[in-house]
Picture 1 (cartoon, rainbow, N blue to C red):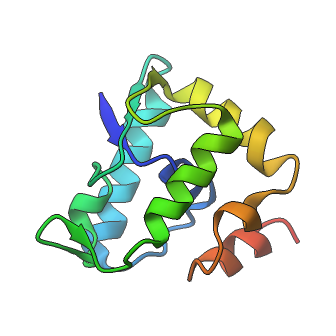
Picture 2: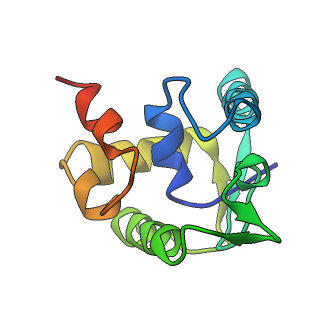
Picture 3: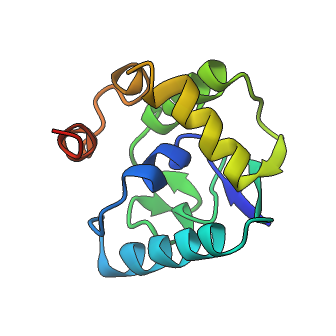
Length: 126
């Protein structure tokens, strides 16, 4: 079971090996491998530190230095996907919901307002 903030599904989708630190990048690659290598991988959507946040240098004393931005991203992602905190589902199902509810209708900017990594996500498809 992987504990995942909802907006991290978008981060995983667009991840190209860049990040906050080498430790963060290593952890992100490991989580992606776990999720993608097993079609039965399950996630639980959480509103607090998840398995990705644990290696982020912005995580200080179980609190994100980015303030309320991640909370907004999570709520927007959940709303568009029709999900709730605490939901447990297969990774592949969540990935599909993100694709059909956010990416295909071009709503990424609605979720990732003021994200410092948005330029990478937008440039992947140009």
